[in-house]
Length: 296
Image (cartoon, rainbow, N blue to C red; front, side, top):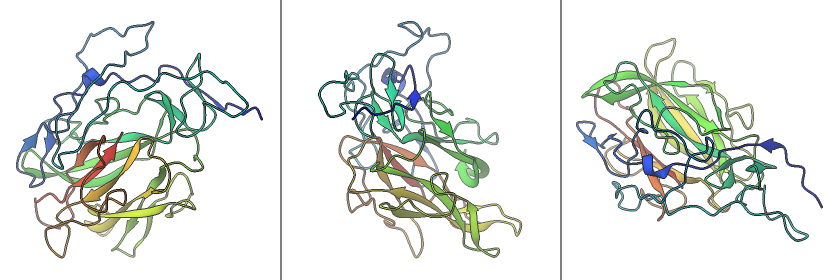
């Protein structure tokens, strides 16, 4: 059966050469790391191939968990051949000649639902203190939609600061995809759904996916409030771009929790890269309780 291709996305290649040198805040919030990091593209560097970025082999330096790494150059998009679809579906190569996906959006040569995330804060010396691993900046990959930002508290330059966290999602919910969106639940100030999941329209995970519940502090009408940032993952699905998440240092004491469902521990799967979100979950403290998001 011919699959209707709903999206026309061009230029899905990723310049992995630019993913070097990002300073990430380490787990105690007092310093900066260059581990498993990315860096901004040099200004003025012209794109090649008529505006498309070249895909080059890159390896993010070993991260805190020792496993984070972007693999070598992704596979090229495949032609539609044979009776069964060979491209355009979740996890399959994007269809040639113009990087099309029937479900999701083309990223690193494959159709994906998760396009990374970023944190912005004008109060920090670097206004983009946590960069999207796929763009090396505070923007979504081409063709991905940036969701509504969530106001959070982070530590940068040794002090607490207000910031905005936003996720990048592909075109529509992908059945059988690794990523099922995210949402924010207030635990104080009356509680309730502060930011719904774009894939469900409520503070819930799509059918077949399970929640990764992380803790952080957010501003509210009652002042600073405890909240849960929930990321939805379908652990049984093949990993396309979202390789889980975990958090360190949350109450009742230092340690691991929640674990990454894909590893059963506070590590990213082998072959993935780690992005550190230097969030605060202990009110009145400038100590980071970092969330680690794993990407491929």
